[in-house]
Image 1 (tube, rainbow, N blue to C red):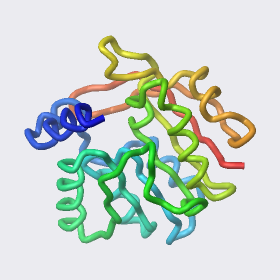
Image 2 (image 1 turned 180 degrees about the vertical axis):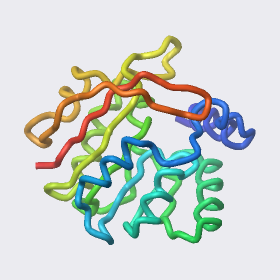
Image 3 (image 1 turned 45 degrees about the horizontal axis):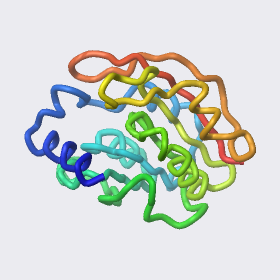
Image 4 (image 1 turned 90 degrees about the vertical axis):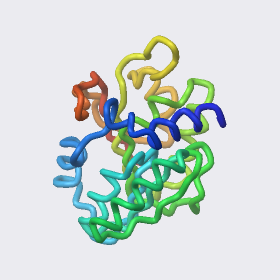
Length: 199
């Protein structure tokens, strides 16, 4: 894990992340979700794999109680600076998505834009177990990521089979798995999207 963390720290420290996955505003899919989800102000929102904080800051500006988690300390430094500049409060943590520093049943909403798709298959059930642990009954997760695995192991596909395997129906209800184009500053990535709800 240390090697992977170093890779991400280098991307954020050098600024190269801006050429690969940075985006200037919250994604349309998150904006659409929030517009229809009827989440009361003050709801606890977890942005898992928050990177440089763009979507966590968007959620905080809407007066949710936001927690941003990423395993890259360099990403969290950028996110912290951005939230201060925007005048919003986010509870930032350098932490592993497989071992969340949160109480059980403490989160109303989980936002995942590209975290699950970098979790290797052998760790994915553990990831899903952590989501199930921290979500309140009825809590929801907006999950999206690359539809296909990439050569070299950069992405592990967020496929219907993987969603069904990890987020089983004993613990989660789910809507349809929908295709989408994940937009970043330098282009798009073909992905899948699903909304999950903790039973």
